[in-house]
Image 1 (cartoon, rainbow, N blue to C red):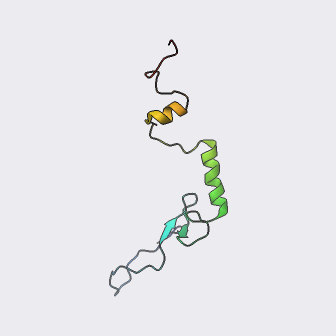
Image 2: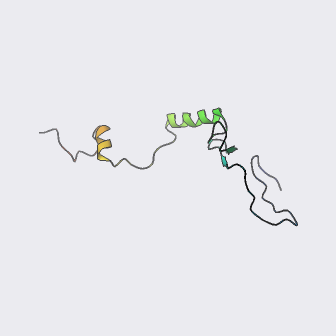
Length: 92
C-alpha cells in the first residue's frame, strides 16, 4: 500500500490488539502545507515561519474572509453608517 508524505500508517499489525495509543504530544496539521505540527513547536499552529507568512499573505490579499455579517449597530456606525439608512437622516 502506498502512502503520501505525512500520512500515518493505520494498518493493524497481525497479533496486535487494537488498543488506543497514549500520545506524548498532541499533533495537528499545518493549515498551509498539512505537515504534522506539535503543540510545543515554535511556529505553532504552522510548521515553519514560511507557512506562517504564506497564510498572512492570503489574509492580506483577501483570500480569506469573515463569512458572517456584522450586525452590531455600534460597529456598523463606526464603519460609516452601513446600517441601511434606517437610523437617522441627513434631512434634519
